[in-house]
Length: 150
Ligand code: FES
Ligand code: FES
Image (tube, rainbow, N blue to C red; front, side, top):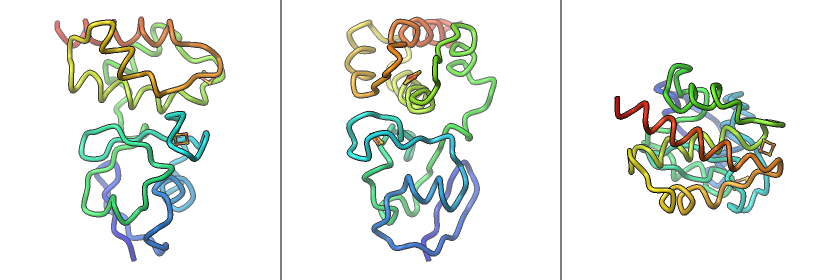
């Protein structure tokens, strides 16, 4: 049995310790907001927070997440400044990459509450969007950062 703390709830799951965390989150816990894109740590669709840091879940063996605080997109409150900025700026097109984008953006702002454009580009660079919403993502992150400074 693997014990996981996800979105402040404790779960026990009967899986192989080497199964990627993403599959446990989606298939066992039914938290399907976190997406599968490449499965190779290359696109960012599967980004979650582990102990507050953005991490790709598609290649992370579930055993390595035991005892840590895991947060998925479902664990981010609707009134979080980043989610609110996403809605206000109408960032998503198809939406597939957006949970990962939001989790990466929240991690950025927790490390750098007032990011420079270069910080933003460096930090978000590994989160791909086939719909090309990058401009709106940038605007939303800067708006959330401004909101956080009020
Ligand atoms: S699905 Fe994990 S990085 Fe692409
Ligand atoms: S909104 Fe479609 S992939 Fe990003």
